[in-house]
Image (cartoon, rainbow, N blue to C red; front, side):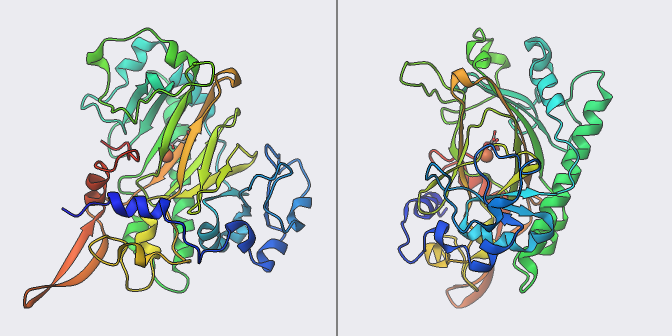
Amino acid sequence: MPSMRRRIRQLFLHSNNKTQKPNTKITESEAQDPTVYIPSHNTDVNAGTTTAASSTSTLSETGAPELPVVDYKDISQIPGLLTKYPAIYLINHGLPPAPFNHARTLLTLPKATKDTLRDPGKSTVRGYNNAKASGREWWDYNPAEKMLGPPENEEFEKDTTKFFNQSIKLLQSVCQQFNHHNQLIPQDVIEEVGFSTMRYLRYSPDVIDQQPQNPDSQSTYNSVLNSHRADDNGEAIPHIEAHTDLDILTLITATEPSGLYVWNRRGEVFSAPPVHGTVLIMAGDLMPFFTSKPGMSPLEQHEGFEAIGEDTVLPTAHTVAVPRSAGERYSIAVFLRPRRDLVVDKRVVKRGEKEIEEETAFWWLATEKLHVEGRKCFLA
Ligand SMILES: O=C(O)CCC(=O)C(=O)O
Ligand SMILES: [Fe+2]
């Protein structure tokens, strides 16, 4: 079976000299458009003025590169921006308030109660899971199965479902923007909610400090999913290892303290703190399949790295690290994924004398990714 390992390494490690610095490549019209502007860290774009709108620089006062903020009415700019930046903030998105109250309520329930919310099949994308060495716990809503929510809490189910459904609609409308000139993302991939999920996450020293639990009640996880990371004083840091998401697009919203970092194909790191009134949108592993050079495929057995051009949206590598002293962080992530059997890559190949159509389904990629060291998809 051909391996994605080398392809993913190349995507992230290959320094493409032909690619301009993303920070300098924003076009004049984008830079002057009052709806695409660059936030300062922790900027409240609702309360603040849009003076940053006229900024042609994407560097913060500290010299760190910053991510753009896009108004929903300018959603058509997102495909272009995602080729230049690893993520964008979307404002005026019309989503209901992010249900952090429910995330907090659920994730701070007594341990015994949280253990009742685990998936009987030990899925890490349904119900409650934790990675104690990483100081992280999370809970997933997977609409294909019954919600494993907290007992006797109707509001929880209502608000969670509502935020999920509207976020998926929003991500679908972002997908449609890729199809204005050519049908890059197949319509069935966009329209069918498929294997999309939503996750509540908590990063907290409390999770690390919890007493060791019965190993039988622990979900399966590996050393990447549950890695240990410490600061200079040897204190464990709540975190999630660097990875890309196995999906089309991911939507993230989080509380302070900040802790999310994303980086681009040139290895430049961007801080992605919560910006009031916005949600962060980043690209998943499927994006290169839809945005590779015309007629080419990023699969290694086809054109591989050659298929990656300047208009190709690469999956966003990201990590979270929350210094122990900063307090606990909550985040909500919505992952837009197609149905497992949907074809994401199709090609006529020659087998001896015969020409046959070779199809790659979404789920095949997921299986392949399990073999990629250090970039686990967390879907096992
Ligand atoms: O907590 C976050 O902001 C990111 C979570 C994440 O990357 C994931 O669950 O895949
Ligand atoms: Fe992620």
